[in-house]
Length: 109
Image (spheres, rainbow, N blue to C red):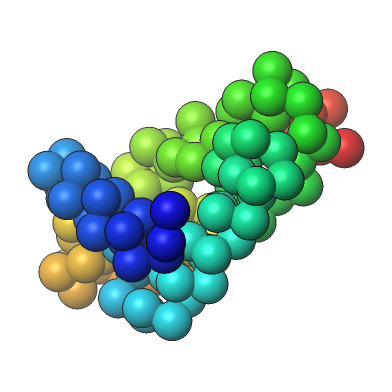
């Protein structure tokens, strides 16, 4: 799959849920490229901003969209890596802010 195809597919499916890509398209394409690289490496699209171990079961919480995305979007308006943003942030109704790591330390390798 090419980056443009992934972009188009995810944009459509996520916007239907009120979730948008970051307006920084260069960042989005860098992250999508890294997701595709992780898919080649591990067989799944692990979050490019976190260290995957290569064990799908251990990494299932960071397979994009990670299980922390909803909480990050709700509380901060963006996910940890900044790929996805909420409708409010997309519409400039809130300002972007620092997003702390939610993944528990015991899951980090």
